[in-house]
Image (cartoon, rainbow, N blue to C red; front, side, top):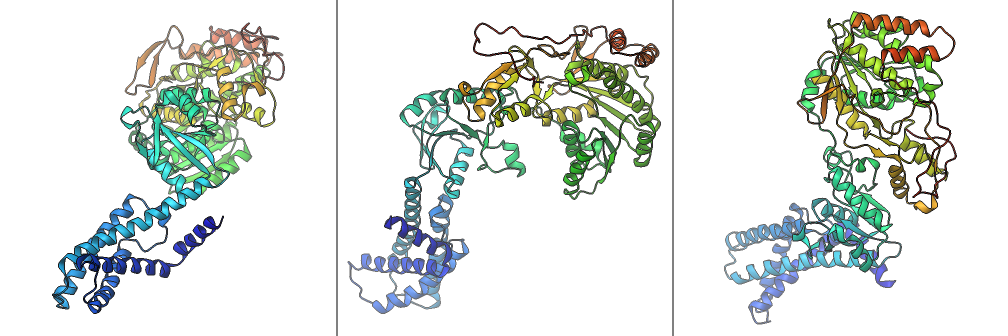
Amino acid sequence: MSGEYLFTFSRVLFQRRPIFISLVQATIVFVSLALAFLLRFDFSLPDTRMLLFSGAILVVIRLISLRFYGLHHGWWSLTSVPDVLNILKAVAAGSLAFFAINRFLLGNLAFPRSVYFLEAILTVALLAGARLSTRVLAESFRQDSSGHRRVVLIGAGFAAQMLLRELSRSGSGYEVIGCVDDDLSKQGIQIQGVPVLGTIGQLQAVLASHPSDEILIAIPSATGKEMQRIIDICQGTKLPFKTVPALGDIIRGDATVSQLREVSLEDLLGREPIRIDLEVVRRHLRGKSVLVTGSAGSIGSELCRQILSYDPRSLICLDQNETGIFYQQRELRRRKVATQLAFCVADVSDRERMRRCLAEHRVDYLFHAAAYKHVPVMEENVAEAIRNNVFSLQQLLDIAEDAGCTSFLLISSDKAVNPTSVMGTSKRIGELMLAARPNRSMRCVSVRFGNVLGSSGSVVPIFQEQLRKGRPLTITHPEIRRFFMTTQEAISLVLQAFTIGRDGDILVLEMGTPVKILDMARTLIRLSGKSEDSTEIQFTGLREGEKLEEELFYQHEEVLPTCYDKIKLINGAKPDWLFLCRQLEELRASMSIDGAAPIRTKIKEIVPQYNYSPAKSSVKLPEEQPELHSRGAAAND
């Protein structure tokens, strides 16, 4: 304990007392000069007066050069290779200055030339040695202190080096006992004093010989497929694991390498995130007036954030959710941008309010994200789903064109393909309306994509809430699968589609393979630090309007490539516009009849692929999962 107290006391002196640091460095310089004289004259001092006079000059020169190279601070416990290089530079500069002043300015020709070199070598050795010894002492006390978590690092590259350096500086409570990396050339080497103990595939064996409390993943550049493999290996260890932020976040300054986070489900998509051509988007949006409906929702709010970064003349955020608009207003106005911001509380079905809004702001581009989206709720509110998702859209298209909008973009859904729900069918009708609409002055484009991770009311937030409250995780069916994408990917698709889409186009993101909700639930349990044995999973049966798997394309649709690999263009039969308008009028008339049946009949005439699927009261469980029960409330999709 006395040793630790002594170290703490000395560290305070080094950190808080510049005078003390200068005295220590002056002592080291003078001792180096005295040792150089002793070595030169066989451990005798023939001219003490010369030693003292020259020593005083040398100490002043050395302190000035050390300060010039930033070596006057007391943080010796953080010494690194750049500090040692700066010591070499400072000593070299100081020696040259001392030689010039002592020999030419003061005319001290009797001063031995060899002492110039011996003193410089000894000064470097003692200054660097003092710093490195302090760092070794500091790290030994950190490692010996109680409460540290023993961790193994996955990765031995640049990010791992940065993380090790940050952890040592911050006193984070982690003790890194080793790294694993698939680069065979790194096996056996040390990174910042931490050994590389094996490959990632050997993690289980490494942990068997080096017991640890946690795993840190330091490969921010890993692809989705690589991250999936790493997560699978980590899950097999039964230890909690975290990862450093993505490289893009670090480069933009949104995060630092030391900000460890729980591995998110976004890391497990198993595919590369979509990349967009930012300059193309910027050229389209700069100086334009853009309106986003449904701006307070998950998609709409991210759309507004992204659009704002491309310097539009004005951005109009419109939603009927007054509280959502309030928080969005606070967030966006903090950005201090030149763009004129407007926040409108309005219902898109209010014809006069929308007409005034578009005319007042002279809207150039309209992104339509306002819609009812929850499948089971809309199955109980069929007329309202059609009124909002179909007829409000039809009306808004006319208003936007009359107001002089040049582009209209509709947010669609994979549920529009072979729909079994009213919500999905309403989205398909919207696609048909934009595709069949006669080409006049306004370009109309639809964007179709799958579920958005973390959006309000989606499966991930519901699972997280159930885990926080200690409730069972409820899944409708053990085999249910969904396409997933991140919010950033969804917005990337929308913006890219906006730049490349032609009038009437339907664009679809290639989202890889669908994810099994049961696997996602089990992953989330592990990421929450819980065990599968301690968390119950209940199956509730498919709800009304649900199906086991969503699809991205109809069989009759021709899938064509675009200039972006991850975005596909749909080439399908377009209905006759006048015939579609007559069908929509008949659909409007059916809404005046009591009950949902007439509406379901009419929407099936418009979308023949619509297949009404009543709720299943129970679900047959797979024989290999007899321990999972079917009860509880539904919480899915």
